[in-house]
Length: 267
View (spheres, one colour):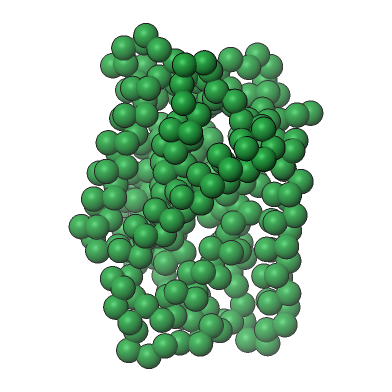
């Protein structure tokens, strides 16, 4: 079955989301998460290259309703989810002490933004944008398999447990980040709003969550280790540059500092 990923939303939804991105980036800068901001911005550019350059120009799998610019809508989508997803992933991998707060902020926004649009939007214009996936999901699967194969080979050749990559942790991040985004779109009536069958509505949520963001996790982890073994979050150089294996062991030993307080938040 051809999986069709479709969104229907008002331009007002875009403007609300742009305002959120400014607030989110501002909070990251306030907390001096400079590397996180740069990674999110570069990821947004990468999303645009893939979405407009490959999905649209190369495979012709993207389409948009008449009267709207595909380039500009995709630029917003790319910067929105590219920045948010990869900034969030970077915070996860680095085990930021405020990870719980960042998570609630992002998931809460993905749920609330479409609901705010339903209540306060002008309801006089709608954008329908969709993509089919048959032309490239096989390539995505190949990228995912190669990435995780590399991590598996790395782990089985390590004698010391602390030098192995925590693959379950990366899988959890890659799947849950995309799943949170997909659920927010689905519950907000944006994802697959004009598709009729349950299969058409649910399939993008399941397949995208397993595949799309998750395929990048092995590579973003390698980038994270390569950067963080030399530089601190504030761009300053570490007093001693760590070896690649040494930095993995250090990252494995790190904990989410406020994780033990989550039960207090939920009590």
